[in-house]
Image 1 (cartoon, helix red, strand yellow):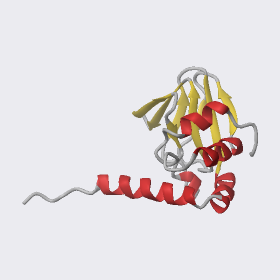
Image 2 (tube, one colour):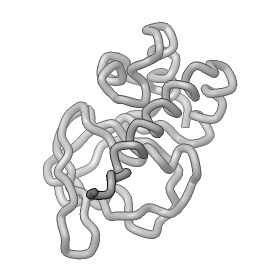
Image 3 (cartoon, one colour):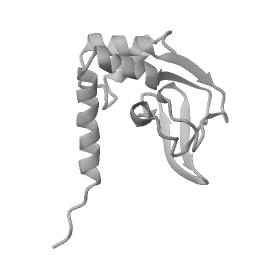
Image 4 (cartoon, helix red, strand yellow):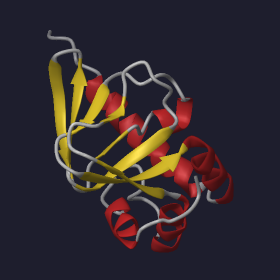
Length: 143
């Protein structure tokens, strides 16, 4: 899926926690590897249980993350989903549906793997963010 990239994606990646620790040149290289995809309102972008093979950055529009009938999140321009699947390829844990006409920049797990090999600092940036998120989920027992 290498390909069309998007100049907006390179700018927005600077604000994505997984990519904010890398330099501009590397962000541009990452942005080039992605592909722009468009979705009509009501279109399912990914389905729960489906193969998780991509990272999605919302370039324009609005999506909703759902687990069954429960709404987990509403994401707009600059927000993202699928960040774990580029690493482990595990099945999707929720549905993501376009609420409005939506454009996403998508990075496949295969492209991501090649980028990490060429730019190891990407892996370190992502590891730092994963550890930060893991620490945030740990609770301190009450004394």
